[in-house]
Image (cartoon, rainbow, N blue to C red; front, side, top):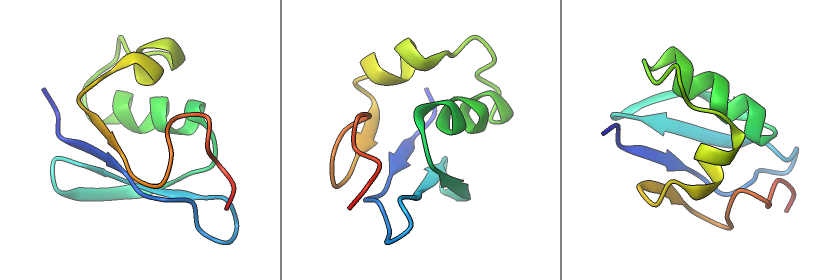
Length: 68
């Protein structure tokens, strides 16, 4: 499975997303993270999968935290 790290929200509410050691960009909501996951080859992922995946490392809050 992909190694996914979602970093704490920045001052603008964006969270850096690292997948398999590469920063893919900033997510501002769960759907943005879903798009990054799909770009990384996990096409069947949706919002619920992201919220439930125990192998996603959420730093600074879980999938409901998008503001400082």
